[in-house]
Length: 212
Figure 1 (spheres, helix red, strand yellow):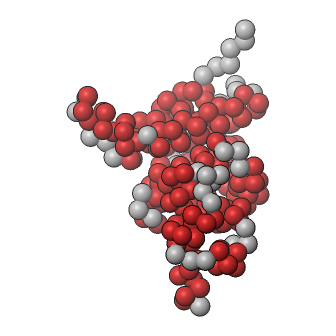
Figure 2 (cartoon, rainbow, N blue to C red):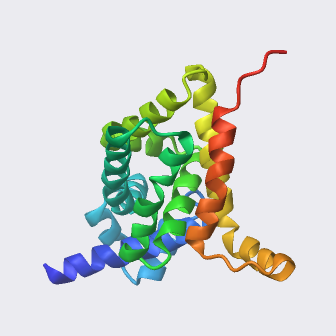
Figure 3 (spheres, helix red, strand yellow):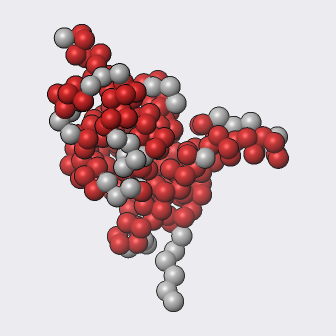
């Protein structure tokens, strides 16, 4: 049993690293099995297909992040009528907790999440909304209530722009922090980068809709 568990973990770890670096489409099962030092039969035994492996890689993070994130939003709403800045800020701690699960877990999770959208992995969106829909709806509802002047269709776009901004920022975090240090003598860790982007996101989501 221990050997089976070790094999499954090796496959997940190898797939996670390759998916984050190369993307889902560009990472073959053969490449994953080579990095994990297992055979293809092991992947089929534990996961059945590449799609199921992709979902399992994300689930290791989502199972931890989604409940904590929705709990943070619910607690915030119970205490006050939160602003968008406060709602986004409530996600910082659950995101940073992922670093305790895996080294550099926060960045890896956001990169994987971004890959799912950039590469049109429709099955991943289905997986997230089906398995974590209740948690996701708490966040979306809180954002909508804090910006009631934004129509639902417009909010759909703005939340996706928000995700895109976060994914780009995390993917470029090393380069951005190096530039900030060289040009402005700023010293930022991953938490500082996340907190820098939150006011920008909140302002972008809440800006009034203009008609042309």
